[in-house]
Length: 301
Image (cartoon, rainbow, N blue to C red; front, side, top):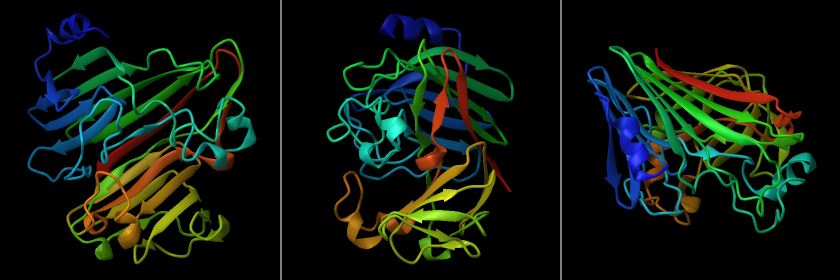
């Protein structure tokens, strides 16, 4: 979207405007009941905060707002593959033209999405963004994507929609949500008891969750997931509802934190990820002109 088109889209809005975060365009929402910050690059939600409440998302204190560089925190969009390309099922890898050199987490995070619609009301704001044409030299799937963010005083909903072109396509994806906490040792995630997971830190072995998830070491797991998870921190309790059958739970802990970009060495104590996903065998296959929606909603309990 050109600067003039973006200005035209926003010229009649009351609560929504464009600001600059470093090198990146940011859509800023300041509603009487809530606030939100959304980068056009990657359609990347950085912040959502109901009035007089804590931010529901974690953003690194050392985040860098540079062209072509994904920002650490918020809700990065991983599409049309999740994680390392060569860890995806063969059907997904078929469309990644060079899985060994392609970037982790797909190609949607580093490009500017187009803001195509803003709908405002007295109690909600809805933003719609579309991904520009995908580089066919990297991914040959031929599908397009759009994403709809809906903000209200009671929560937020994110709907990532994939529309197949004139060929069948298989893909994986995730809404890679970072959550804040004041104390990772006092944080737990409910809703996975009895579900199987793949432990990426133990040779990708399959295990079964017993009880709540607690964080006491580096954690990198892909769960077969139920629809509802409860995230309990000292500050707040959030309910995350998603329509996918897989979810990723992640915390880098001490040693990995030292190797991560845009990540203070002690930040592992103040964040964790619960990522709504279609990962591993939960990947999506669409026939020509079919569509698929990955939807998450967050509410405070």
